[in-house]
Each structure stands twice: as C-alpha cells, then as structure tokens.
Image: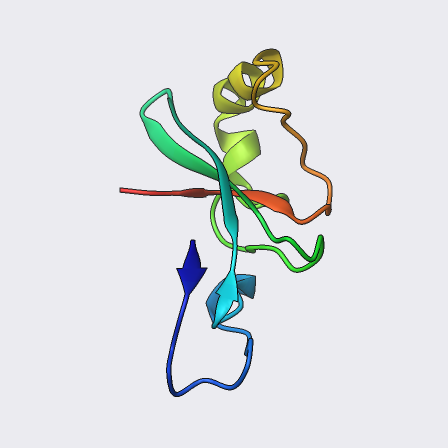
Length: 91
C-alpha cells in the first residue's frame, strides 16, 4: 500500500504521520467488535500513523475489548510499541 501525491517532495510527511510517496506493507485486515482494522508496517521500522487506533490512540482505552481480542490472537502479533507497525481503520 502507498500514499502518493505527485506534487509532494520525495517521501514528504502527510497528515498524522503517514509519508507521501512511501510504500507500506499491509500485514493484516480484521474486523473486531465492528471496527475494521488494518495492521500496517513501515519497512523503515520508524514513522507511524498518529490518528485513531495508532499506538498512542485513546481508542485502545475506550474500546478495551478490541485490544483484548487482538492480544489473544496469536496471528495478530499485537503490540503498541513504536516499532514501525501500527493499526488504522479501513472502509
């Protein structure tokens, strides 16, 4: 997956931590308690989404059942560490 803007500089930062003209890996897509979430990885291992469902998002404390289900899923490899992987919603 990537976010591209032909008018942006090489890998310029866009809104909420996503880099323009930069590729990301989608590691998982899952629906948990009505929330459609992607697990995404920045191959550089740094620079992460800072919006809803990011590592420091309040969504994790507002919806602890989502976090609990992902933590219980061994395939999710769930973490809220700053490691280049992050969660975000999709439609």
